[in-house]
Length: 347
Image 1: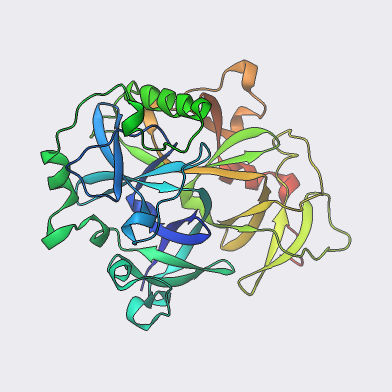
Image 2: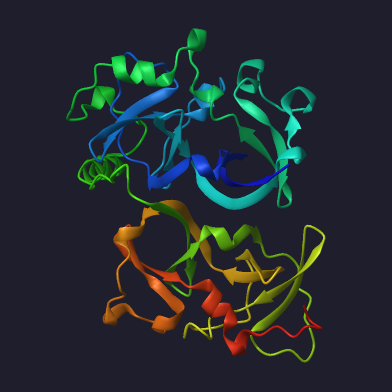
């Protein structure tokens, strides 16, 4: 059985996972335009790059009460069966590699979901130190009598609106938040459409010392919270220590010195990005994971001199992300730097 990468996200205290291959991008939640033809769990539609995307509320889909939406919520844009749709989420938690045979079938799992909801769930699996509910991406698009969501969207009478209050998707939001939701929707409709033939590649966008950094997902095994760290005596400053990761001993390496970023040995309340380098698992402490998103390769540009904080030899280039320049690291070059060499006795 093969292993697959899953994006783990949170929604009102429940952890869900979806195959990364189905994820296209993650955006701050915009204002949504309601339409009467779609089922109740499709809470609205928004225009992104000239295409209308229906947005699903999993709580309603799983027969739970509808909750208030917040500015910090995001919409996860997914694609399956040639259909694009969004799922409202509260937070991105991790990207985890999950072995297919480790997924417990829903019929054998003691899940706190209704029978209706179980039809839309593949099962449960371990992700880090937690259990996650894995969404059945195909079934969740099935409506009554096996009608596809795409058929409803095509038939729906979708019209541009000025978002009147009586049809506002989050009436509980204060007026100042409504303005921001509306501004987001307007900005998304003006985004440049990506050609279907464009070569896309996935990046994990992380935060490190107040910088936005992109890591090619092919190097990333997963993310985890930093647990208890065991110090290793007589080690150079970039070796922070070791921690347990799923029964393996993980050496934590601080890469900030190579990137000319401020460095600290304080790692509490932070995450670790687990990478595989020369057949070894290595942990790189990071401040935050912002997104896992597919980008267009031709959008990569040389870093402007004014924002360059690292030598060109460690950079693939930069790419624009939420009005921020993301520096895409050549992770192999970074790890080959002599300063970061891990003593074999330590590893």
